Structures are given as C-alpha cells and as structure tokens.
Figure 1 (spheres, one colour):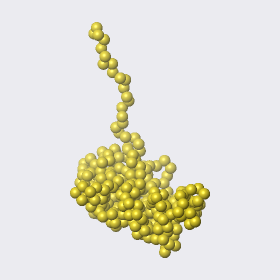
Figure 2 (cartoon, one colour):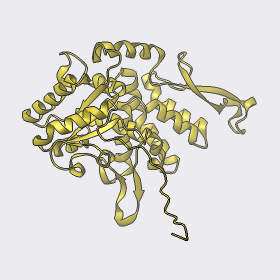
Figure 3 (cartoon, rainbow, N blue to C red):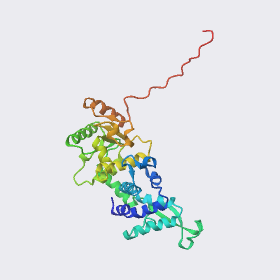
Figure 4 (cartoon, helix red, strand yellow):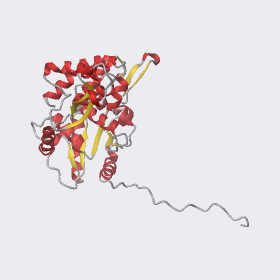
Length: 331
C-alpha cells in the first residue's frame, strides 16, 4: 500500500465520520454501495449487524472498521467521491474532507494526473448561495485509487510477485489460515496436486523470501481464475479479526463477491468442521468441496480440477422431446 493511500484512509476517517452524521447517520446504507451486506435494526437492541463483526456495533466502531477494510483495498478515495456525490451540499462536504487531508498535503479533489475517471459539478466561491448550474460551476475531479503510473507498476509487479504465468493455463489462488503445521502441510499437498494437474497455483508457500505478502494477496486474488478458500474453525476466527493476513484476504474476497453477486470465482473447500462454522456467511452458502474426509481426497480433488478446467464430471443431459401424454378418445 502506498503511503499516499494509507494516509487518505487514516486521515479521512475523522472527517468522513463527522460528515456521515451530517448526512443523517445513514452509515450502513451508504456503505452498502461498497459491497457490505450489513443491516441496522432496533429490534431487541441489536443495532448494526454484520456477517463478519457480529451485531451490536456502535456507529463509530462500525464506520471505523469498514473504512479500515476499504483502505486495505485502496477504495477510500472512491468513498470520498461517492459521499460528495450523494450529499445535498457538495461544496460543504468537499470542503470538510479537504480540511482533514490538508495537513497531509493531499487533495483528491483535483486533476492531478491523466487518470481522471470522474467529475462532479460544485459551486464556485462566488455562487455559494445559488443553485448548482453549468454556468456557476467548475469541475472537481477524483482520480482512481491506482494512478496511471501505479497501474503500469502493478502490471510489472505481477510478473515479479506472481511469477511468469504461461498462456492457456488456469490460475488458482489459495486462501487459508496457518492453523498448525499439519494443516499447512495439507494445504501444500493440495497446491502440489493442483500444480500436477497443469494449474498455475498462487500459494504463499511458493513465493520467494522478501516478497511483500499484502501485494501478493491483492494481485493474486485479482489475477486468479478461481480462488480456493480452505475452511476451518480457526480460519473463521481469523477472517473476523482485523490484524491477520486471513482478514486482509477476506476483505478483498468479500468486496469482490458482493460487487459481483453471481460470481463463481470463489470456491469454498472445507477441511475441518462444517460449512456454517468454518466459513463466513458470504461463502458458506456457496457450492464447494468437502475435503474433511481424507478417504475421499482423490475424488474431491478430481472434481475440483474438472471444475477449474471447466470440464465437470457431471453435466446437464441433452433436453429431450416433450412427451405426448394426450391419448386419443378412441384408444
């Protein structure tokens, strides 16, 4: 994560949170736009409910946690833009955010590079009391979280971080928690077996010393054709934490799943426990594979590989003709 976006994430939290209350306290509703399937209810005092942090969070803690999640995946600038776009008084909202970021010498609301992707119309200082119109407005820009230079660097980083991926190969990222040495050995075996099936596996056990793990996670999940999530009760605990690598991966996966509801990219693979206790709610209801019984390992592995290569063992049969159930009266 670059220093610039880390600062935006931490520096904007206070100003953003204060502005959120000016917006009417609709923090849950607002953050729904960024892929969080959270809800708020007064029933039995449950308050804000989330699939990863549980229920009963205060608005302050909830907003801080969600902004931390969004900062990990470089989306805080997007949050600032969306907020300024939705509020009634755009000028005041942008001014407040600028005040928060000024000590850091950052202004995301300006044209700072060629990678400008959106613009909004706001009032000039001389027309603060007038309606926003084309004749009394100037464009204010927000840049993508990845600038043009950063995008080029990211493409270069893929080969450095992920390795050179051959054409025509399926790419799989394995997300898991370091529960024990025995569990890590099992995950390594799975990675080796997938590799033997011609699949390019993005697995932390294969990367070189000195590789930035956070960058490996982010680039790997984005680049992969499939993301295999190894579920255990310990994985579930670490997924709900805010300080683990598993939580970081979970944040990226969660944002991807909610943004693309119908995606089949994420495949839950159970190792210990059951699907409800070993996976977060956003993954537990997805069809996956049960590797909890070692006696069925080879069968599950074959089914998994076939799915990855888009050659499932069981396919829908050819649709037959409609039967003629209507008999003639004379029969």
